[in-house]
Length: 169
Picture 1 (cartoon, rainbow, N blue to C red):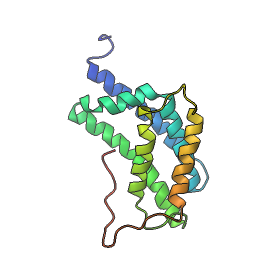
Picture 2 (picture 1 turned 180 degrees about the vertical axis):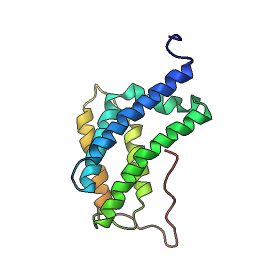
Picture 3 (picture 1 turned 90 degrees about the vertical axis):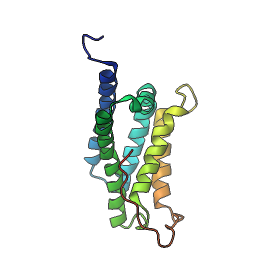
């Protein structure tokens, strides 16, 4: 094994980069679609959840072992995470400009909710259970899009200011 890699950390880092490359292809494919932003959000969430459900071991290692990287490598991985967060936030902002999402909704909070829900899947999903990855993808996509466009979105507290965009994954 050490003929091909220098250390266990190198192997871990390469695996985490591979997860990002796979995930990046989902963003690129979704961004290229000529459909409204909420439809792109729906497609993205569905594909992201399906990827996570089909790759439980990789996702578990990603979130459990990320802290084993050197600070420099952790910073590189967090920088990659920003790409996905920015994409989702951009879709929400675009939908706000079109009047499809309440303008008081903070896109960073929605992005955190999307990734919090979709990325936590590895802790509870059982492939031999009743839900398929495809079903979960569709379910999550509808919950997110319907939730963000619903008329019951809470208003921010009076005097609150919008938080800065998330940068920590």
